Image 1: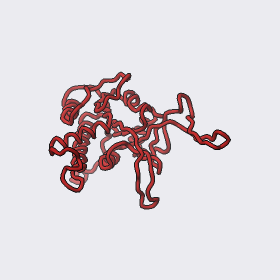
Image 2 (image 1 turned 180 degrees about the vertical axis):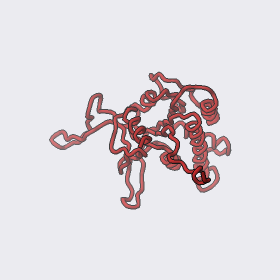
Image 3 (image 1 turned 135 degrees about the vertical axis):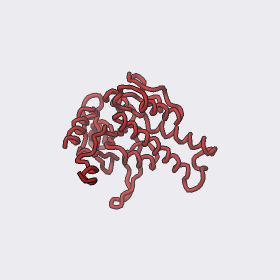
Image 4 (image 1 turned 60 degrees about the vertical axis):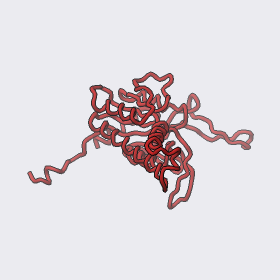
Length: 252
């Protein structure tokens, strides 16, 4: 066998997916995480009230987050997915760490040309690298939970417009969206209806309890979303359709 033949692989190793979901409060993001494959939560904010799931104590520093992740890498366990909840809490810890290291009172006073925010982005890269080690060495699915915000987006063809996006700094958002295999926006199925003889338009839920909970996995001018599995449109906010898409992608 030649050296070239020994180096070429027919198919890349199959690894668990990297997923980020975001949406409004109360939509069920943490509940979704708790329903995943044998999860353990790494909390950077207290969002598990009323949800029973294995979790680390609330992380209050970047060092503690790194310690928890290293435990999952090194110690024996049978957890199959990590839920990082949430990006907002994680980024707050990263910002505090930058201020601690530099002694600056706020990020705007860390050097010039946005150096403080660049340092936060670099620390996000370090967290992503550890998550990758966990995913590769322990074959754990990574689920990142984020809140939603209106983002002012720019497009060379369509100009400037508003869209829903994960609530996180733009640099870190770009890093995480690029890294993840799937980014989904969790919301309810809604329809616009006219009332008062057409004088007022309201949003009404389609389905029980204010509308069926859905996950948008395809990007649009209104929503930041993506996936590497050929999915289009929206899915129920549940793991089953995602696992079907994952398995079809791997088998294909």
